[in-house]
Length: 499
Image (tube, rainbow, N blue to C red):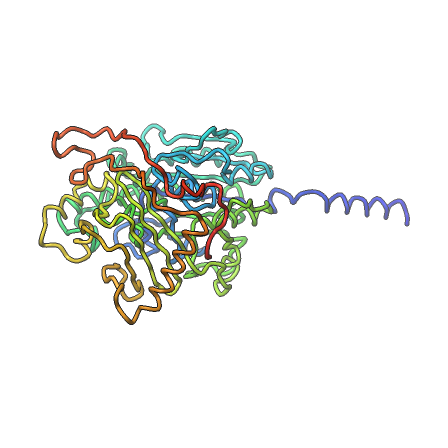
């Protein structure tokens, strides 16, 4: 063999031994809204929201219609996504504001170690004991810039200033549309268009059609439109850098809207999430709707596997990468599990769904109404329901129902509002037996439990943040109790249960 051939062969071996070039690996962006329900984007049928940029991503990408959160509660949901684990397997982080244990890994850290540039801009709310955030994020920005406290103000700057020789993972987290509706005070009509007109708002069946509720909903949709605007700005910047086609983008939310029968509910109105995926280089059927079952804990193994990074044993999700290739490909998931633990009020709710539209709910705190969080209880929309008393529809009355059933079963294809509890209906007896068994197996294998020393209510159940007896603002700094699964050391359990 000549010296030229030997040299050529050596160079080939060297090239094969080198990691893939940066532009061969996909970039990743998660756009996560704060407190937005699945059907509050135009592409999901909203008749109120203006979301042209999200709608455009759905039209050129893929829209999932059966994507579910593991918690309809801010920090438990985010911590679950970032670790790829069920909330009770994240230890104390299964309850609002409480931290992840130090031994669990946030998956962007693994991407960073594999050569990705990682950044978080906007809302964090993923606390961790003994956290070394510099090991996870190359760049970390807050929520506020002059004229915008919605969490989006740093997004474009992060994209512009990224190193161009590395693939990237960006967690772009808005505080829109969390209550106090600061977009109303910071509105930029030249960028966002006119504010939403309360007269044009479509009121959810779970709420009463009253002026105060319409005003409340209009302000909520203003924040969704602001969120959408900055997604469009980021996409334009990616296109100008010729990086858009190889960037896998997910647009989603952390939990349902902060209105009656939204946030903190394990029903679809709280737990189903919008899930728009854009990736021109990787999605073969642009504009398709995918009805396969997806859980948000599946994001972690999907991103890591696409980046060529080993998925850690702690991850309980399954990759949905094959669904991006072809909507007809089989899903690796047969069930999606969700849970609700303490968020302002004591709670222990569990749910499991099948792709066929069967939803089973188990409630270990049936004596209390499932009100929603304190910010919703404090809202005009909730007050409308309380004031109406005996004039409520079944969907509205469910918000205040106490005691509640310990078990609920729904056929969501026939009952999208999930108000007709089928427990006791002989036509669905086999479904009930199956879902009970699946739930039992999941709770046992993942170490779930109902704590005896549970965290109790921090706020007033009648008035939310204001004490109904004294009229003063409740500080809400009472002691926490045990977390679900603590007695089984569930934070050390990696078993996923049924999938």
